[in-house]
Image (cartoon, rainbow, N blue to C red; front, side):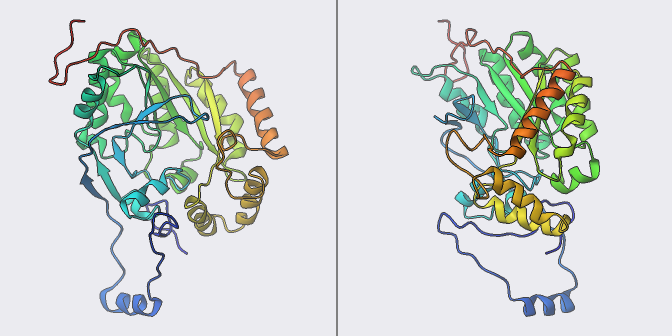
Length: 356
């Protein structure tokens, strides 16, 4: 298969779950169509507004350090080929492939729904995570400003929030973030995969260039907004050689710390990633997948709680050792930021703060 300019996925494979059917177009018909009509147009992005009844998702996973999150958008135009959130598009009867990055959903009622949740008498405050499924600063945030609305509400009621993004668009909200930071109510993770702009365009075609992400990391910390680098994911035989350079770049940008995550390939992501490898790195596709299976007990992915974020193999142990030594060399530590939950004051559903 051939790569599609400006997109991560090579195809629009359907899910093997949620009752979606797998289908293939008739190749002869496609050939004749192109002869008559010319090459197909480039894949465009379509945004549909969703109006859900709730906006906060709660979880009990032992693998992640938060129990609640908000996703302002479903799908992500950044198009990261490795994104573990791709299978979630199957809930809309859409493909985790091209549909995930071209058929997006925005939730303009998010701030209002969050206010209703925070106003409940039984609500117990804990940091809300954003950017856990799709990027809160993907391109359509410029138009919808849903993430900013949520941040302004968190500032209004004193609610702690954490964000992860691959975009320097976050700097547009630095005024709100600085106020949250002054009250110990925010932490930011800037996700970086490679220093190589060309490789980044192949992996994450519509994200900010690596240099812009590190510039954003530096600018946030300069404004007193605690921001750290997330080297994620580390991809065997594709990006792992950059590990030490990425840690060094994070240190130079004033990062509050750094962390790394090994590539994960949930069920529907694995075949998409294989297609991507064959399109861009056919010379090493077999090697990459062999290392991944070695780390995941002979499978493309190990989905078990307690294991999915802990790759096991000599290769994975070597990455851990390299990361630890790089962190020590540049005097970085884990990105520990204390978020203050004591300032929260529940709003009333109509927008007025409670006196008690």
